[in-house]
Amino acid sequence: MTGGLEPTEEYDGSITVRLLDDTAGTKEHSCRSYEDAIAVVKANQHDVTVAKIVARDGSVVFTSADMDIGDWESIWRQEKRRQSVHVEEYDCPYDSISCFADDLCVQCKIDRVQDQY
Image 1 (cartoon, rainbow, N blue to C red):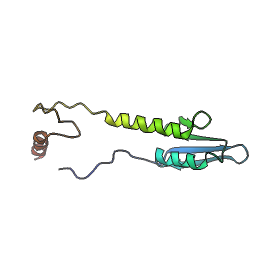
Image 2: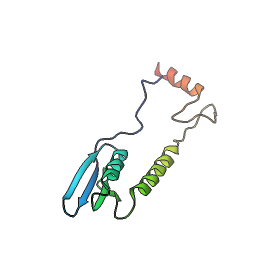
Image 3: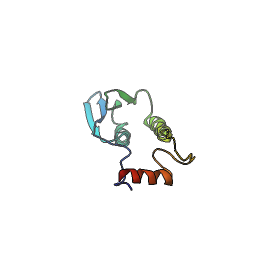
Image 4: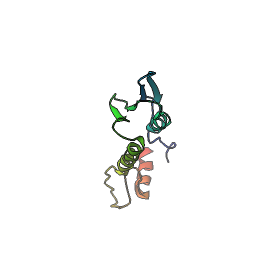
């Protein structure tokens, strides 16, 4: 019924990891996702003075001077799971308790297909 699976997240490479070293200066790594950014920080955290993850909007969301990357990653994953549990409200005309906006009941799926034609 659908034309394929839609991506749940999109990455545009605008998450930046800044590695600050007192002797070598600052290096920036552009990352496609927070997972990539976390991996860059983990790989370099012991070689630099401070590692930072900068979000798409320019805000610093992690700095190794304030927190361990493992602790931050755990909190980030927990928040990501919490947000994915949020379900958009949908009022099923057939009063099906298992009908959601992103997972319609059979009757609503039939109605949607019929509305297309």
